[in-house]
Figure 1 (cartoon, one colour):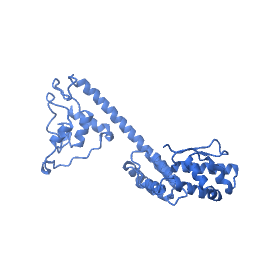
Figure 2: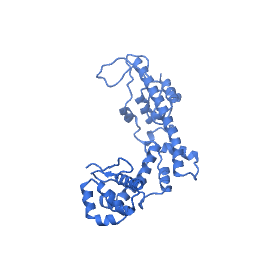
Figure 3: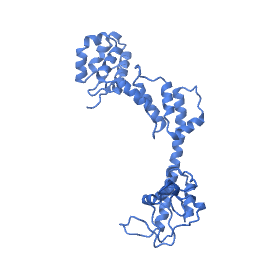
Figure 4: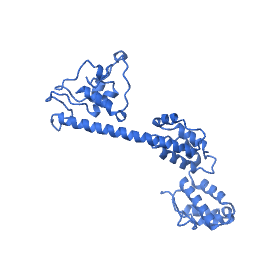
Length: 310
């Protein structure tokens, strides 16, 4: 069943609630549209319910109103809305929505998009005991920022006197800068990969279309590492010069030299499994510096490493 929605041609016209399943968003829209109509037409509280009740077009809601018409018309509009939500919204909808708000995390979303969504959900609880005051959403947002944004926010040392809206705006600017830097790094990495791919294509001998492993048997010069090979070497403690996995050195310290171009085959995940030490004592004793995923590697580092392999 589709969800109900609210239509109102003008603020001075009575709104209509279409047929469909009543959701918290539609209930909130209905309440606001009715309040707007009452204000523009200056309708007295005692007449408010009867002036809008027939705008509920769903047969179930219409029948419900007729059955309780005497009681509902005699009460306030607020009492009518409480009865409507209690009868037609999902059981414990307010508790479930509050739990959803409190469990919300930024994840990969832009901060402002996430913050607006959380505020909108909390707004649906306005007037309900489950509604969160400004301090609670502030704490919720701050505690569930993505890891990449947490550090910039802490370093900014934002004033504790900021209102929720002011704090959100400050964090929004910090996140916008983070996203801009991320986009720049991603573009640099993509450009580097495309450049490396063009170089590989020019140096790589033509092979049969059925071959899945690139070889350099007909070339005396070892081709540059592919993006996939760089990723494998970084993830498995490899050296960009000798192209071996799980070794206790970097390319500048490598004494093994580059592989023989005539027998070299493109590195794969299978090679990492074969090279992985079987026991703890077989693992390199010298710690290897952690390397970030390829998407965040500065081009200068990759260029330095790949140039050593040429």
